[in-house]
Length: 528
Image (cartoon, rainbow, N blue to C red; front, side):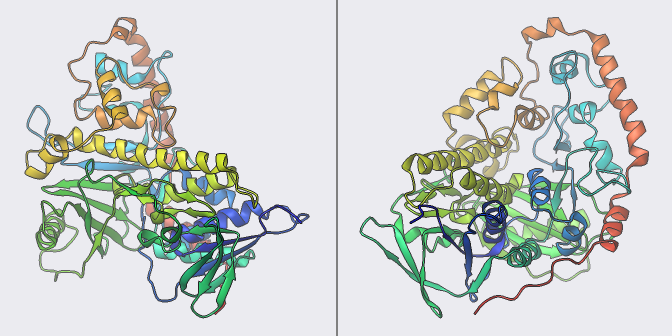
């Protein structure tokens, strides 16, 4: 009798369930000469999905390409647009009393004479007056300010001049993945899980379904969101809350039309308000926006009123337009201490969630599914594999927590909420050590090598505009030649002048991709 896993059950749909299903289906059943693993996804017909994640990270294009997905079809089916950076506004006041805009791009710059170009920028200043660090060393901001796409009109799918991610409709994305997964042989059952059967070790042997009765199980993945329907029945491990580090626990969200449908900004916006911040995610045919806040400082009604006032002031909502329908989302920020317990693995919101400031929700699903493949067990389920997976999972959530907390720790806004995000929170020892070290030198590659997501450049792009490195004298300053910096800046400027005219307009590129999108994946039929 084979010791290989023969059947795998995923409970829960949405982006978490279907992205995980497609990842596993694509990898585990890649060899038609071997016995195929039976993969079943059980999705409740009565419980709606939350629809997490309308902005993504640069790993998603690679994942879609691994799936063999036509990018034009994906863009058309998911109402998607390109994302080249995050634009931050009103997060701090500079020494002149202004609240400047700054960007977090997806590209890391090349070195300048073997050293970080950020050192040269600090010592010799920008190549042109007023240019930010980001604009001085990478082309992303110049491209997005020109409302350009990341490639030329005749470039192939997934081609690029700069790294990019997507803005997408989470519900449409889940449907698209569902149809593709079923097309490729995954079994979809619409039913509710009522209970689980366990053996004497506490391992799940079967699920009890409302309509279909007993469903045998060897390995179960829980993608049921914050409820953790299956995982909660076999695990007594505590939920590790980030509430003492990150204060936000609510979001009020709404969908609105574009101000100008032909001007689609290829970036996410994150604008600070008195009690949190507002996201703005421009899809092809609409804008998704919402206010993330702390219920300890804002009531839902107060947040609603401030949010709508912001939308009217910014021009996203006309002054004479009626108030749109909004919805309040409660966020449980933190993670399960052990995402993998016995023969059940929690992925997506079932495993954990950190507020959406850096759009990490879909990435955590992607990387969790990849880590599961890397540590995929036999029926015996080796404890070292479980331990390794859990260490990676907890490390990922702690990495995201630390990076997001930097945004708040380095703000100097004066409102009670913002003071609390700096003064009334816990900071991990790792983050304390890094911030202290980065007073003595800039972040280097090896500082963040243990992280699975954010690099030294991600930290530099967030810390530098807020003055973390200002007024410091570094030992390396004496090793920097201004001529090297001038050549570096001239090379980047020459590249911008060459590339920018050739890049497609963002709206025109999206329109062209939608117009030539094939229709290879038909809506699938599920089992009762």
